[in-house]
Length: 288
Image 1 (spheres, rainbow, N blue to C red):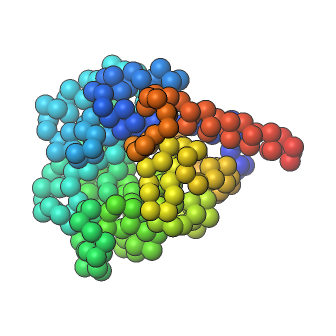
Image 2: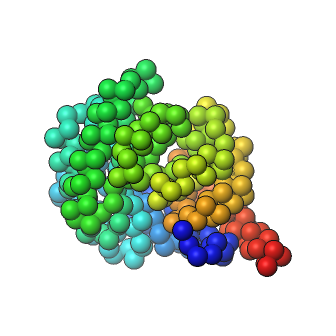
């Protein structure tokens, strides 16, 4: 925990953008778009079938090209958000082989974190204790591989479209990991499962090392920031007062966006978060 609560100005300088926001573009173009919005920190998407800016199968040639693009862009890589297949849908050795190469990629581009999913998207009825055991065993082995090259392995849980789709199942998985694998906290997945993202954060704050932002309503994760029912001011209060000092990364993979372009959607989301950060600065000054 920090000695004093971070200021809201800190929040405004800790905004990042995932390259999935520009998944229709190649990686160099996506990085250029993000930088042009005044953001120098990114999550790199290695998401199978959705956004493969970084190859989720960890082909060495493709990884080398991606690494060159990241290095030449000048951006800071916060994390690689990857789907090398989950341990409940692919044999462990295959997944771990991909994880090892993705972790080496992280180290090469100075990304401190590799993010893995909390199970496959095979359906919620697969979330038996045995499946959670399989996931936990694989994630713990993956964490050791990542640590060997100086990279932290994290898991995104809950994820509304995965085995651990709600807070209860996410917590069951985290309990099996016994604090050895930190948590990526995505506001949209928490809200889609019916929970309040600000309220739910507090109980899990000591496990969280990365926060992703997208709006949502119960049952729908894909809303542009400000177009769901998440109160992001409350989210910032909860995270900052809990002592969270990491980045807030906009991961705007949305449907039916009200904006004319993805750039406009991302810019609007950044503006809203900066406004909320500024409002928190005023509140802290008044309290002081």
